[in-house]
Amino acid sequence: MTALDARPDTTATLRFPAGFRWGTATAAYQIEGAAAEDGRTPSIWDTFSRIPGKVRNGDTGDIAADHYHRVSEDIALMRQLGVTDYRFSVAWPRVQPTGRGPAVQKGLDFYRRLVDELLAAGIRPVATLYHWDLPQELEDAGGWPQRETAQRFGEYAGIMAGALGDRVATWTTLNEPWCAAFLGYGNGVHAPGRTSPLASLRAAHHFNLAHGWAVRELRSRLPAQCEVSLTLNLHAVRPLSDSAADVDAARRIDAVGNRIFLDPVFHGRLPQDLVRDTAPVTDWSFVRDGDLEAASAPIDSLGINYYSPTVVAAGSSPAPSPWAGAEEHVRFLPAPGPRTAMDWPVDAEGLYELLTRLRDDLPGVPLVITENGAAYDDYADPSGAVKDPERVAYLRAHLAAVHRAIEAGADVRGYFLWSLLDNFEWAYGYSKRFGIVHVDFATQRRTLKDSAHWYADVIARGGLSS
Image 1: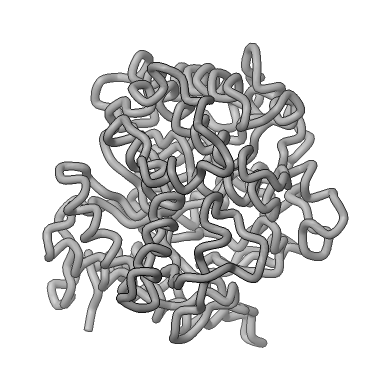
Image 2: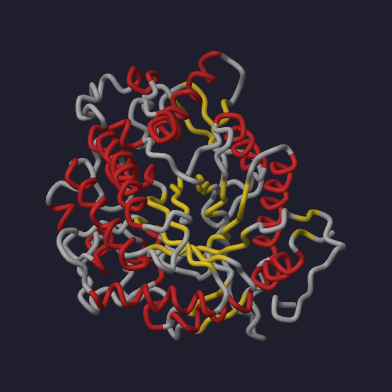
């Protein structure tokens, strides 16, 4: 069954509120390809993926899912699924190749066409300005640890608002700045591959500042009814036990994983326990007067990306850690239960815990699940079908957790499944498949997986059936 032939079914046992946004999501570098076409210059991921040993099998995003040339085909798939919203990211080096100066019109035209075709298909576009593809020239000038990068990002936000503000009503400034700061500059497993605790903390602050300056630019250029948001991969942190040492380990990770962004953005302050924890690394003198006020520019909703919980205990982590201020005090443990192909635990309860925490900590702030999904070892069987019952079970459990959180008072407005397409999965290259649409990367053939048909049925019903 697909959305085109389905009808709302009042027998759904878990119905979501009227107007709930059913979406799917992608990121530019992971799907677009066309890495050197129409004026696009290298991003940090183009450079990083060419360093031997950094990305599995030496894979790059040069072609990826070739979305740049297959926009119409991919939008037709979304329409078949019946999604109401589509979250995409803009490739900064495609529209502003050096991170400075005027935009490249061919780059802007690609996103104009994408948005126009989405609107023609009855799908609301949700634009994310940054999903990790910093122009390489800005990294060469110092990257996110430098304040100027935040300034450049504000200017870029203004360019995009001017180009698409008349047709895109929902804007997200940053996607998962924790990953970009701490995996990119802390332990080096993501681009640009630096390993400096100080650089990661400076980058985190400048992401907060960039977000605030971008909000200011967007507000000044967008129609008043437009929605401005931020997406964070907040950590559902659990101490192994109730011991004071384990609870303190969880506090440390909550500070550097969650409150390092939540407190500046929503309260205009730095967590003082984070400042104490990171004293061996920095005195935070790079935070200037007015920065925290700028970072706390009001937003309309908060995007939440969730995949699995984090279990910690007191002790030292045996592996190199991106967690500045926590390395000698925290040990990470595997959560029990089944695992995905990423070796991530399947634990929907963590999503419920996170949403109800935000209900209490940020009253009045609407929430949107902007990423949730799972990678499994999918393949097309001899009939051409792609059966992925594990993914269906994962999605169903997590949607049920969202529904339970809504029933408990969490103001959750939408759910964006990650991901529409199999894609370039960062340091894992093409070895991990998160899509509900299977992509044969040799031929670029798209095939709806069983999970895609299941999701279309959920959307058509407005909830989960028994």
